[in-house]
Length: 445
Length: 51
Figure 1 (cartoon, each protein chain N blue to C red):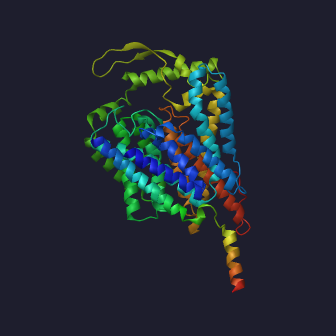
Figure 2: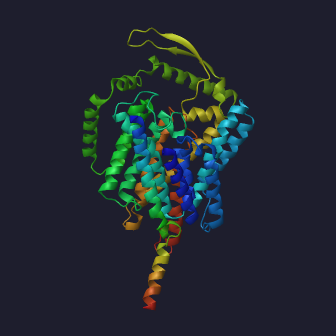
């Protein structure tokens, strides 16, 4: 039954694209996040839907879309460079076969992020993309949130619709992404036009935020707690009544702690005393290995280079009376996007990665400041959206310290949304500049 | 059993909302073309002159 509904939904989604080709673009984003072909048991499984819609989206844009004011921004150039560089390291990878497997989905994520901003020509397109990203992620977050509330959590045991660790269905990744989209959900509540603000939109948005906050509890990913902490600090910039917000947040935290399962609180306590925790100790040892590896291989070892690591880990004594122990581990993943980039793509790859993300934060900050005090009603959505995307980005960057999600496609779609917003605003300024003298529009993206 | 119900609820709710959003997007002309403030002003002037 579920299969039939998903197939009917997908066919209808694709059919809308023939009326308005931009909807193919949204359809690919949906497929890339939700992976309906993996949720179904037959038929969809055997057709390369993702590839078909990918091609439809690109052909639809090439054939029918207005390309007069499509501009390539500096950040898209960074993405092109990163794509080319990753292609080179894949050719000379330490593990050619495994590297090819990762390259097979990484190139698609990067090409998509380069292409997506070209299609974001109107405000409604920007909003529609944000909406589809949110609702797609919501299909995973709502299921996870309800299961957590019903007591079905546990590290590595919360089932998020799908049993495999694919894309956002992986617990730590979803915990980070769920917290990173909260600012965007709150933006949509006030500035949406497809679903204009009313009590039903508010109810859904708040319920979704609650589900997103529950996910790190359900997956027991420590990263999630760190991300929530970052979110609560960042929100101070966005809220109007700061003291009220601090008081409310503190009260909420106090009330929430007794309801958290004991397994969760004891796992979170290992953040403080990480040297006595096996997973955290191994992680630090792998990072040290990566640091040394990069010294010998400054251009990186290609995708999956971590497979060659062999680390000796010294675990400190625990409070429970276990003495210090030493053990050996091998082929342990990076568990950090920065070390993932350093080990796999070397210093140039890490530099490109940092440039891509820092330029995004700076670009959004510029937009935020420029439009923060606008008096024009039609510009009221710009600064809050820039702020929401920037805050989500900071949360991702902090979460990335502990999760290897340097090439997570969802994040690249959020970056594409940032680039699209920046180029849209720049174009708009150029169109209006004859009327209102402003500072010359500089490259924002 | 309970897991399947939760999964189906989540899929039905979000996919229903995406479907509704697509339906509304199909009816919106500003998805593909947006009238810039300059053009809007020009159109207004033209209308005034014609009147």
